[in-house]
Length: 300
Image (cartoon, rainbow, N blue to C red; front, side, top):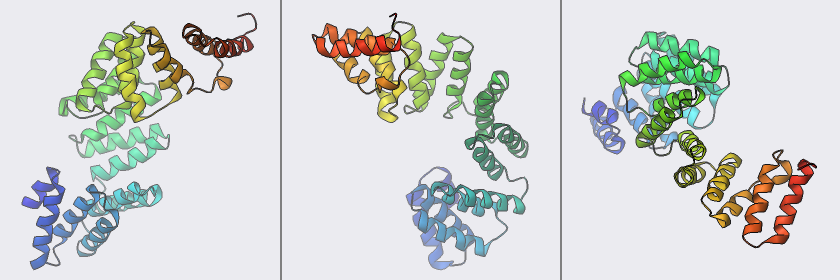
């Protein structure tokens, strides 16, 4: 009971020590081997975790959680095929084992098979109506499929189970943004970031909406965080625009120069870079940037 409580609480180092104590006197205790493996997996020690879980499975081959956790190790190591086999084996032991159904659904969603994913998420929910990850997964899949009403329905159900679970407010924010309810979307993205400050899509989308509202300084704050987590052309372009709007032209130039101007089709990007360069006294560089804008549209 203590071991299980420590595992659920995420106190993995203590859980591992408790398992080792039990195994000193009960070397064939499958639960101790299982929870030791789960803790080692959570601590990123995949090889040791696998050894413990394989031992647990040898001692108890009727526990679907053990084989599901072995699948999670394969997933962490980038071996999706072996992970999928393990989840299917877990379902051979118990066809209604919701976590394995949910994990299979996630694999389908990640590979772009969103309709198959939805069907599996619904099956996981039937097996365990409290499995919040399945509601979040179904909502995300429906969002990708463009079915905003279904996405919202599943996200709302997830929210009713636990309003502090990461990902839910972001999905609802994207739905509101797509429907043009920008104020509500901003509120939801901020809620998401209070739960998970590293939610990259929330940071990026919040930056876009604040920029559209003319709150460029606040947009900069959000976009800098997004850029630190996951640098991208989109983020650099938005940051450049936000800096330009706040009069920080040197910072804007740095972000514009991260972009491959020769690959862009939008004449306004090299034009805006040209303006920033012109206003900071870099006339020769400004000419080069403005020439690119003219190349994209000779009548510009």
